[in-house]
Image (cartoon, rainbow, N blue to C red; front, side):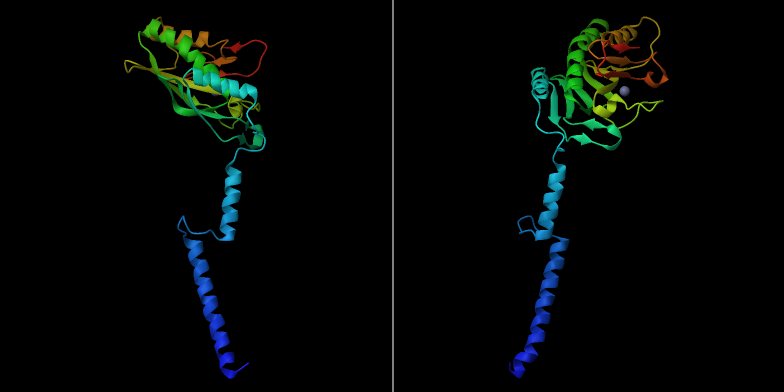
Length: 239
Ligand SMILES: [Zn+2]
């Protein structure tokens, strides 16, 4: 090796290292969408995407789940598939849907994450009993059903039993909006006003379509909403 070559070599290596370091730093900070991804980032993104997929427990939809969705579509309900839930504490919802409407003309607000069975029971109930009670007692259509709680990972108030909400199997309804703009809040209404008749009818008619029904008069926790759930029982539990 010549003297000149010996002198150049360390300088060339230093320059190469500097260029490499600058390039690596630039890639760490920002990358245009079209640029090829460095290996590490590509791997990291792949991992994120894999984690975002429904959990393995979710698997493919069963025939029952597919039929339920078909029934919801036929009723004109608005919904989309939501990521599966497998949380600590026993919360479990392998095939959730996010429901935005219970019919073509009746929104559910805010959007609710539920299992399909509960969503279907709600769509059927409000399209039939809910709508006919609103027409009969209030002379209007229901345009919005307000929900106060759907899927939520929590224990039932007052004891250690896990709530049906933790399975997406329950829907709390706090009120409805009517086609004439009136707002009816779920509450204890004394007397025999049209509003009282409407709310009392909903409370009673829900027993059967839903397997658990609680509401004003059941206990203080349910003074301002109906709790409807689809917990499997031999006979509906309604209070
Ligand atoms: Zn509830």
